[in-house]
Image (cartoon, rainbow, N blue to C red; front, side, top):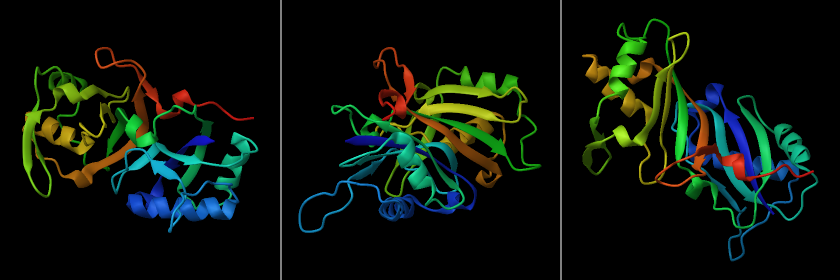
Length: 236
């Protein structure tokens, strides 16, 4: 049985990297008595895969991982059993039974939505609806994406699906490409926004929360964003 588990990550645990989160869940699953399936071979391991890894320093309300189990009492029982093993900062929110032909979580990622707030006193003076709208209305947004091995200059605009300001004008709401071929980091968008308005971004000023991670339930011509748990169902 394939399951997709949704969880949140907050507080000091935002400084824990992806590999440590993976090891943490492996131990929590054993302690919770989940009847998880293991791979075969000389060194068997739990069958588990995560969606797009969360960057260190970011919080999230929408992280996903897939596991396979031999048996299951109910979705709620699994949620309760795992939450009984969770430390403060991680909370299991959903456990959905996946159809047999479902792609794994990582391969299904298409986009992610972020809420970007600012540390006290760090919001730029030019933050308002007009400058956000002007930034997003540009026909192209040329940026340079740096990695350890190379630099790539490209147009980021087609990879931004939403860029708006919250009702109280304190939070930037951003939905971007999170697929393996795109994978736009929210800080890169904010760098471009600051540059457009004559500012220089100090990333320490940003408080970033991933609100959810999405699959494309439509097609490339007409994308339809749905949470990764969209194709699953509760097991009762």
